[in-house]
Length: 448
Ligand code: CTP
Image (cartoon, rainbow, N blue to C red):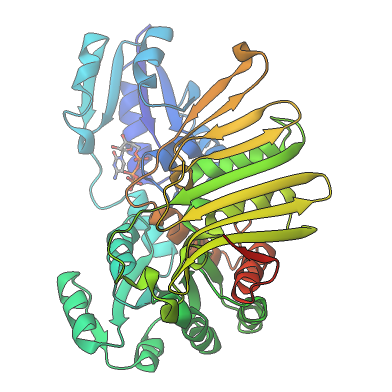
């Protein structure tokens, strides 16, 4: 019996897939079809697959062409499968020409001509209305945002607005963005959604104006420096039926999310302590980050990151919080925060002029989680136990600048009309603004 194997995502199953499966089947007597797992697709950078793995398996099954369907979970699995199932022929569409020649050591490799004029990407494009995005604020983070959107289908950056028109013009030219607007309102008129990438103090104002014009907003951190402002923005977003997401990249990264769900499922027992730290040594003190008038300082710059695992694991209802800061020219170059819960205590360390070990340690009654620095761009973590034989390491991918994950979640919320993301809830984001406010008001605050 001649065994044939082929692999694919088979999203929105189409005639191209069916033709391929028919021809694959005709190459032998028994056809095995590998369908990619959702996580594996995400790792490969396929972020917008519409059907989940169960739906895709069902669709392949319904063709009646597969004798066996397997799930493709990891890079390198093809060699394992070929050996395990004693496969004679590996086949795939001609779009992969040459890519799988390394399998010739194990079986025959056949590239079948691809059906012209159809693909899942095309069908996804037809299904989803493109979200027209405008960027306000053409600085460093906006520069990173542009290439990252190309990994999220259904997006189109159609314009930018910068308070300094010349900067906006230059940014649009360099990034092939069609419009640089002379006014924010002008841009609002033409877009469906706005990415707010301006300095901190204008986040609230721009987000509010965009939301009130019925536009979806992805706002850079921190969303707001006052609790009331954050509450207002979320309730305006609901009233105007638009999606507001705070652009906390850690919240949307695959490894961090997996770590959180594992801990919530009891992997280290009851959480008793979370310690999180991040710091940057910036020698140039003339930068915005050191300017009190522009809300510089380590708290406003990065407190939302350590607050994320703390609030996610222990909730936003802490009993007290104390902040200790080293101030220089009105900005905190270092802050340590201690947050007490009835049955847990957490701390975070933030530095802009002080270097700390930037890791995350979550201690529980059965073990602890360790995420090495820089933990906020988590691609690897460990669960450690008293019995070291039980220790486990987990590896993931952090692609590019990591902004694609938050953009994907934002677009997914927009398409599916999902108000609020479970990865960073409205309550968590509001509580983070509350922490900023406590710092601004110097409540429970000590200078060191
Ligand atoms: N295929 C084909 N003809 C097409 C589309 C796909 O022969 N028009 C083949 C691919 O070469 C592959 C299999 O079908 O062997 C599964 O491909 P998959 O990547 O799932 O489909 P695409 O439509 O190419 O998906 P995408 O647009 O997401 O890349």
